[in-house]
Amino acid sequence: MDAPTTRRRPRTTPRPRLLAGLAALALGASVLVSHAAPSTPRIALTASTQNRVTPGDFTGYGFDQCHTPSQKAMDTWWTTSPFTAVGVYLSGNSRACRDQPNLTSTWVSTQLQRGWRILPITLGPQASCQPRFPRYDDDPKINPKPGSTGLYPKAAAQGVAEAKSAVAAAQAVGIVAGSTLWYDLEGFDATKTACRESALRFLSSWTEQLHALGYVSGVYSSAGSGIKMLDDARVERPDAFTLPDAIWIARWDGAANTSTSYIRNDGWRPGGRVKQYQGGHDETWGGVTINIDRNFLQLGRGSRAPKAPEHCGGTDLDLRDFTAVRPTRTAADGTTTSSDPAVVSALQCRLTEAGLYKGRIDGVYGATTQTAANAWQQKVGRTAKPKFDRRDWMTLLGAGRVRVLKFGSVGEDVRRVQRALNAASTESQVPVSGVFGLATETAVKAYQARLDLPAGGVLDAATWAALQQGLRN
Image (cartoon, rainbow, N blue to C red; front, side, top):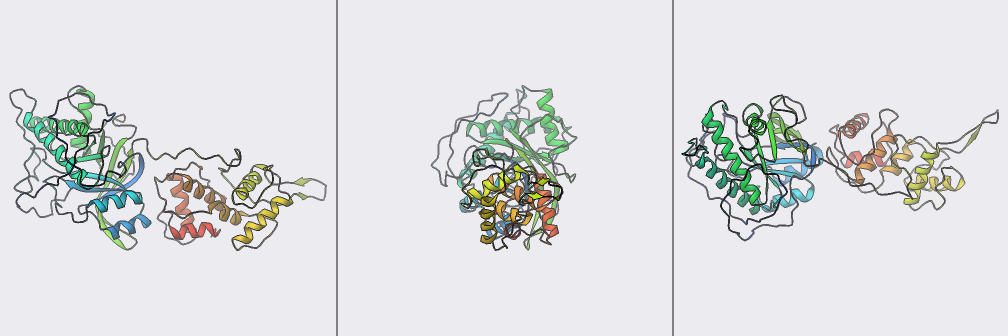
């Protein structure tokens, strides 16, 4: 995750650490062993405590980079890229990018208000056998001496200190208690006993101190070293260490999931994994290029939509297909063909919600319903006609506010677009779940491709406009 070996390794003097307030918040996090940490005095807060917890419950894509992007870059990527989470280097003397001029309390609150999930990263002391560190004069490695008790007390003390520093830095920029702070432990040789055991004790104390200060603990490391080390400790020595609440797996296999063969499937599941599945590379969205790592997140309860509101006394609007509605037809032999009552009921309900229909929701496409349907057609600039076709459905179902939606988005706006997509296509249909997942992303990309729109899978203004105009190809 951190700087590759090609980055310069300057020798510098220590930089002052950020000062901020430490808030105590009781968490329901499970702690396997309690190694009591010294109490920490309260310090007055220097940033807003009104921000939401980050990253919270989320399933979707994220990226991380060395320098925190500018506000302009973040705004552009929000509307064009598939990413919703961003990792930023917040603290730690071993960071390659110590200078973070963009990472301010204003930057943090602006991203959180927009909808970004922030992953604050600390890169402090590294494993004693890690060959690329120390990077500067003031970034000591994790102390590998076991001490008289064999419990690596100096490594533990370093973990406590680093957690306090990380919390202070987090509070200074408005990352509130309850948020997850991530420790970046770069890959190392975990077969070396003192190196491995001191790293475990360091991370155990890091986690305990974060819990004491009201934060959630996360650890980033390579799948084959630091993450495997933690998983082995979880299974083989469950009472020896306090393990992090979440893990961030570095495994560049190109698979956007949180799986890896290096650890057992049950560890930190459900809701405790991030995987960095692609390493450093340039990506360009909306004309803005950033060198990033790609990540996939499955945290907390994942992206879950709130309960859907009831429509028209329980009418089902969440259909997999919205076929054309037309008046009843009588064949030469006297048989009649009527539109699907469930589809007609959905039409009557939406027209009621649009203020155009005041009759009963009875599933019959009669004169009153047709009059209301014609009024909608005229309202959106279409020709009034007996048939209410798929294009009409798209305009009706997609009507409403325009908001950027992407993988991981949830809520009624997602349900609107899922219904509109189901009206737009006669092929694969999207479950109307209120969660923008893989099926929705695939359908959005297919729709964008049919209209020669940038097929990034993001519901941007142009894609919304096409849906709300009823464009199908």
